[in-house]
Length: 212
Image (cartoon, rainbow, N blue to C red; front, side):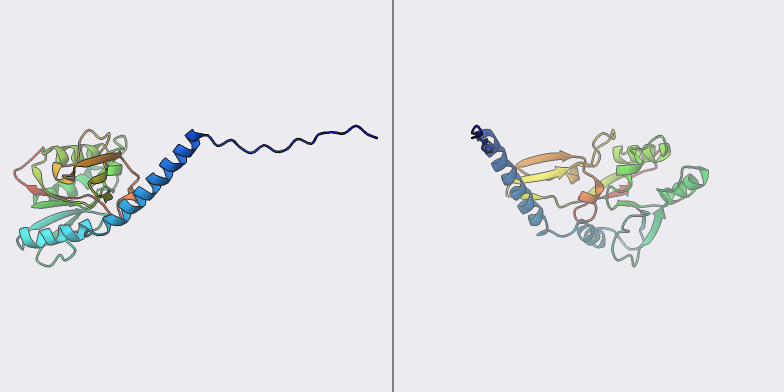
């Protein structure tokens, strides 16, 4: 008779307390984020809120500069003169002649989302003038001041998750863009696809004097 051979039994993976804790924490985080994200839709879209602000605070006849490739605001433009800034055009004298003409006659600048500054200001090698423009605008050196910011962040109870599209740019969002909440978790810069469509930060700037 051939010698008997013991067939090794497959060993079940060991489940440690640490892995159980990690799994529990991950499940809790996913549940929390889903609830916080869904709760965000209880509030109006920032573009609607910004438009309502315009109808109440900006008189008819005002000139408004908006950015190409983004949603022009307000949603109803009757009574306003809306000018589109060619921010995504290649840098050159022709582009900046148009930009300067628009800025010279503009009463309000509307940034509907981070689509412009979130990409162009991060590419100074290709868009040096646009990077400078956004830096001057956000720091108040362009002759405009932020008068309103509209947002809706994922939140659950007293805890709010806030993303910052200006992280690493050398300027920051206006204080109106930060929620007055007991607990704020800053998630840093997110890809625009995570925020532009359903919870952008919409910023309205008003002319106060002639800037740089």
